[in-house]
Amino acid sequence: MTDLLLYIGPGLGLGTIIIVLIILFIVFISFGSIIWISIKNFFRKMTRKAKK
Image 1 (cartoon, one colour):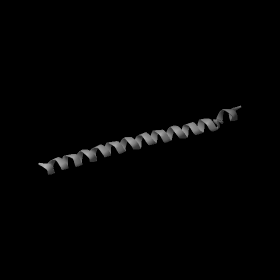
Image 2: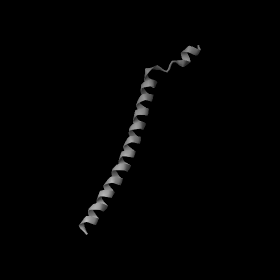
Image 3: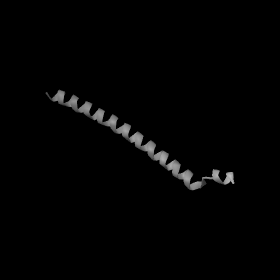
Image 4: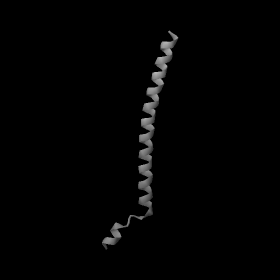
């Protein structure tokens, strides 16, 4: 009886893998956007100083 409770099946395993991948994707996209916005603002400030 206890062996049956340990079986999670392929659906739950696949769902868990997909959820973990989605969370990792969200984390990488958020870090990437933070870095992208910082770089964009830096170059925007540099071009404004160069125009003056």
